[in-house]
Amino acid sequence: MAGHSKWAQIKRKKGATDAKRGQLFSKLARAIIVAARDGGPDPAGNLALQNAIEKAKEASMPKDNIERAIARGAGPSADGASYETVTYEGYGPAGVAVYVEALTDNRNRTAAEIRHIFSKSDGNLAEAGAVAWLFERRGIVLVDGDTDEDELTLAAAEGGADDVSTDGSSYTVVSAPEDMAAVRDAIQAAGIDVQSADLTMVPKTTVELADESDAKKVLRLIDALEENDDVQDVHANFDIPERVLEAVAT
Image 1 (cartoon, rainbow, N blue to C red):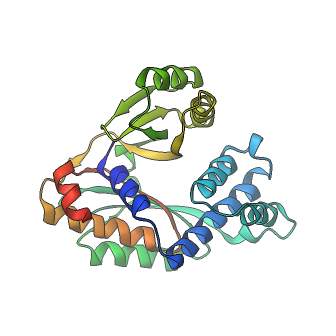
Image 2 (image 1 turned 60 degrees about the vertical axis):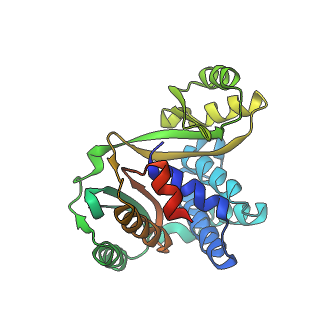
């Protein structure tokens, strides 16, 4: 599992302030609204909505909030009508490739803000297509590392997973994007708890950040991007050795 995924897990374990949780709920609601607007309010026939709802549940977003967001997106005056999906590509410190996904109602504002974040963090925004080829869209299900590997592998295979691997602290189950929901359901049906399930951009190659200074700079860039109100997801191809990650996480 790439360093970005490890860092995300560490931040989840640390918890979030009420302000950050409120910001997260706003982002999740926006994703639900847009998914319901574009594909309809029924999660069974709308993979994007299904994934948005699952992410909201993982973040402990109240059921009422989720239902309101679906209703707003599917309503006759859909609040999500002004939002559009945009992506930004760039490079961070040490040549790390960064792919940003956002939902915005003002392209010019968001582009300026993302460019400023890259520049302030010793990175630079690049042209479209500059780093996208370094990633591929995959479904990722994370399971606790204490899980019985044989049971997990069997359940994952039944759901249609392509691969199961571990870094010692957790298992990563990889699948095609369209199979992720079936893989998650198969694992849960086997009585195995799922830590998270998400569609993400998996790097084909990674840049190892063995220097603590480089690691801190890259993580500051990722955190700054994720804190932007319009940004939904940030993907990067860095990998931080465990000893360095532990040092920068303290």
